[in-house]
Length: 270
Image (cartoon, rainbow, N blue to C red; front, side, top):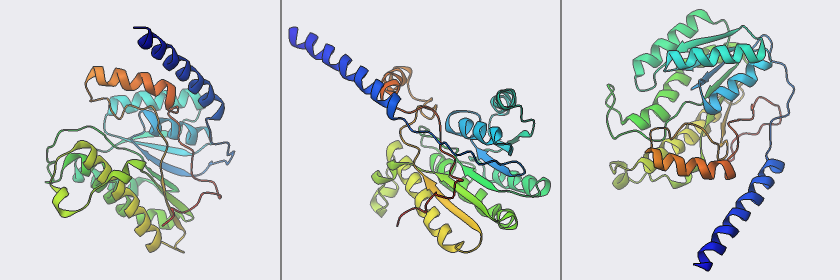
């Protein structure tokens, strides 16, 4: 019994030390670049990394398009951003990556109404969905995380080229290291495997697109935001989420993503 008590006390002390260490070592983007006159799109902007990214863009004076699936949540996010930044140039535009037709409609409306697009942040993603196919016949998690954002990017390329210099930022993850693309694994259902494959897809797409667009004035980047406390696991069982939230408070960063529009940003290493 004494051993359990001692282990518990040591665990608590270790957690406190780590928490204090993280508070002092956590990094933030300190760039002061002004984005007045720029137009940016942030997908999945109603919560988590997407929301914080959109909020920062708005603070810098950009026209911010919140590309979201849930209109009600997006409008709440819009009002909060406007209230926090006094930037009225924040709009909601609906998109559902589980429907490629929705992606096409979003791109069509954007091309029709926007004269420029300086930054596209492909942030929207999910980590826990059932093994079902979308109306397009694709595995839903893979479509939302990979196929949908790829289609959106390709449809908006002409507008990005027109606005150059412009940039595309694909939010990926170190989970890509766990991907398995061998044919015998492609039909194996595992949420972690599909999620990892989708993030590897983001990286490979970034590398290829950066190569194709070299010297075009459109820069392409991929970013691993670190272990960040967001709502991506909101569909997990409540008990599991409670455990994750406990450790998240100790180890994970706040929901913040450095902006990746600074000139010191580097291309993904091959």
